[in-house]
Length: 315
Image (spheres, one colour):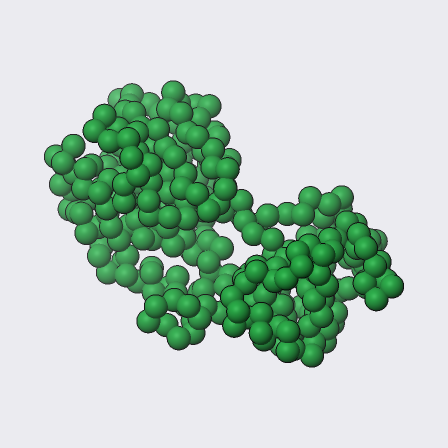
């Protein structure tokens, strides 16, 4: 039998808010576990400013993620920054291999793998990533000081990106296919009164132009008689989609069915067997398919059930 020294009752995959929250619950239920993720914080780390989180009048995504990390570690969690490259089921247990060639074994996997930025799927979009196209204003805004940029989207992410970029760029176009912005009223009021921001409603970006880097965007209808706008950068803020590569791979390799999440706003559904896979995306409420329950249960109830079911108290 293979060496299974690095064996855990539970391995949480993902170092974003979902994974860190799951770790806190697991620790409080005294379930020995490991948390592995490629990058601390996930997309939450990119948030420039958060003003609606209880206890925090204003905080960045990086700061709040760091607080979550410290909370999880204070309860004894071990967090590992590494990329999962392979998961296979062997003798009713999961073998997890990382990019740094670490090997771990898990009775149960909790996939808190989060989401990735949604693309607008235009020709040459991938070509211009890092050469004018960005999905993170917090990361890349400084490259566009005193330049002209555009933001695609009308939700909170797009609104806050426009406001942040307006602090740095000389001109910001916000292009949205709807007839009014959908974010928080506080952000919208700031945008509408901002001299550097021009919102273009009922309009889509349909083409990208440039040679070595992005130079112009083409609109589906004229704005001030212009269908082409010269820009130095385009920030795409149209939401996120679930990370599916790992779940699809697991579905192929195991007999455990994992249903796809059609919307990032809905819980992901996991079908349980032996061993068990638990999917956690943006919510702490999971639909379980266990002999004792076919209903949505809070994560803490699942963890409590896990302790009673296995009668294993790893501390």
